[in-house]
Image (cartoon, rainbow, N blue to C red; front, side, top):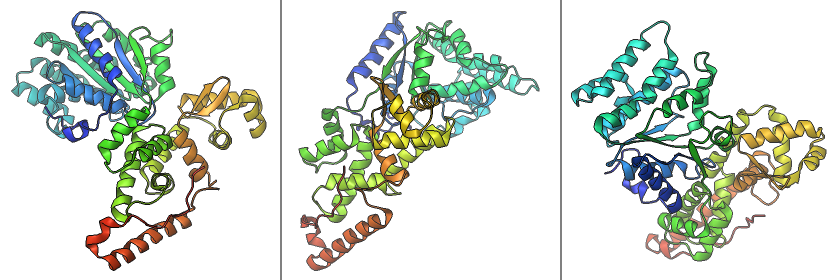
Length: 439
């Protein structure tokens, strides 16, 4: 069965993660036996968390009552959050995810469809929700409890089991800002403990926040979830994924893809897209993978550049002290793996102040601490920050050189195409090397 949000063409690109998929299957088997824990997956943005959830979702869609939620799409007020949660339960139960969810973002539409399909529990919950939402003073805890318990009620009604896949789970903490809520995780746990037929499989990119939610002994859901980190691809995984994206690379070129991207799936995907464009337009050239990587990181149109800009901006927006944080990142971009005292001397601030900033950067997943030294968590982001965002480009092309590079490639392509004819374009393999090197 093909899901609207996860078509077969995308599913075919899914690569490995066998141990994580196996852990999900084991957890779901344990659910049917009344055992096991819920699961939480965390990792860098676009490292493959969503793909893992959606792939597993597609494997379970026929055997359980399954729903998928992306909390970055949910509203940041209790009322908006509840509407989204309810509507998505209705969408997945009523359609099995085979149609566009657009119409199902309306509570009244979901109620009507539930009545048509004799989904009494969903219809009645929607009516109760609407009744409360029409009040001047809404009981926010009550409406949250309505939706948190809905899928369990559906599973009981159908004598089956339910699986809730929740992406970017840390966004639920936004609800703590409302006076009636105060501690959304405690409210979530209160409903979790009543459920015997529902398994939660959650994921998020705010690693430190999720670690605190899942592993801190003071957290209301401590002990209820097993935490797993999603790592970059291995060399073998990178080769396999690269082959799915582009067939014309040598093993040496695939190894260079792995080396430059660090096995990050999104960087691999973007780099291979760029390589395919370059091969089609200019033919094979020396150090082609390096040149494609430079394009992706340094060009304003590069997908990797846009991703790094997004991660950098959104991460610093979540931390205080932009100027000081930026200065610290610049120092680490130039020399990764510095100790607290070294950073303090370079930035000329006291160690206590610097430690606070470093902890902020760790909390937003820009840095990691290992053996009392601080490193960029994402080395491609470090490279981008040093060479592009902060304007330090000793071995890389400036915008002017980048434009000249594009123009030179275009000129060579057009001239050779004119001389040899369109039929001979595929035979052109000896485009002159352009001097772009990486550190």
